[in-house]
Amino acid sequence: SSSMYVDPMTIYREYAQNAADAIDEARAAGLLRPEEDGCVIIKIDVSARNVKIIDNGTGIPHEHFANRLTAFGASKKRGRGSRGFRGVGRLAGIGYCQELVFRSRTGGEGKVTEIRWDCRKLKHILRSDEDHRDLREAVGRVVELRRIPAINVPERFFEVEMRGIIRHRNDQLLNGAAIHNYLAQVAPVPFRHDFPFKDKILEHLGSQVRLGDLKIVIGNENVTIHRPHRDALEIGAGVFDPFTDVELLNIKGIDGETACLGWVLHHGYTGALPTACNVRGLRVRCGNIQVGDDRMFEELFPEARFNAWSVGELHIIDPRIIPNGRRDHFEQSVHFDNLLTHLTPVAREIARRCRTSSLHRKWARDFELREIAIREKAAIIRQ
Figure (tube, rainbow, N blue to C red):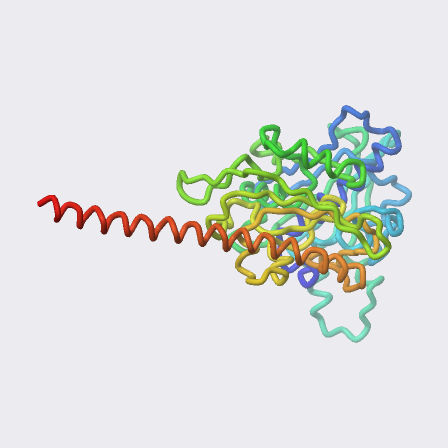
């Protein structure tokens, strides 16, 4: 998993993605009322170096629990339009903790089913020089399955617990603020209520984009995560560049059907946006989960730097445009190439706005310098 998920923070994306699929299933099965939130709670215990991620989706029945959570590359979601379908994301945490624990309960079950992966022992087996190494045998040696009493737990839930998290990259995996900022960008969470273009964007996406907004709460902070978009960009200490308009995009596929819906927020284009604003770049989402990062489409711009001046988002609708296993890019296909072809004029238009804004600012600076020179000469003449 440390090869598949090079950035450890993607662990949280994978578990949020699985939770979103389980919550969608719960809604479809009538287990969640329309007004009831699909919830994901993240509990961080810094002193014990543990994290728990709990959702109120369908859960996994006891009779299927062991098979699903010890299978590699097999997913019951394949071909069903779910966000996850490769059958590897649930094991994303193996490379970054000492013990990975899954627990679940479904309606009507009197006990909780639990499975534990001994990650340290697994790594030792993988590194060892034993002649007879078999995946099934290795899993059998590191996995423990048991049933435990259902005490103070919901009737229906799924829980991931990462125990003994390894220190990595400034210990971000245990940093509540870092987790909040990351999930605000990549997870299917709602816009803030005061974001002025929220209604226009949601109306444009309509029923074609399955948003599946989650209520994700960092338990320690008791703060619900929202998308980072606001009414303006903070481009410096106390300096703001307001959003002025939203441009709505509808990109057609090869067959003439809608392949992608998106939007671009226009502003003053005063320069490259700071990373800390968490919205810069033309980004892409599939199933309302971000794929890749803010640099995904920078090669489409006449100058790559202009991507960092932009704020925009694309939602993939065409099921033939498929994220790769890492979800850091897409599988190469004629359908993805068609998307890039149609996005290129969008990137060029953003670059034109950047250049125009830069030119206007240069004129304004030249005017100011000449005005100063004229006033100095006028003062001399008055003397």
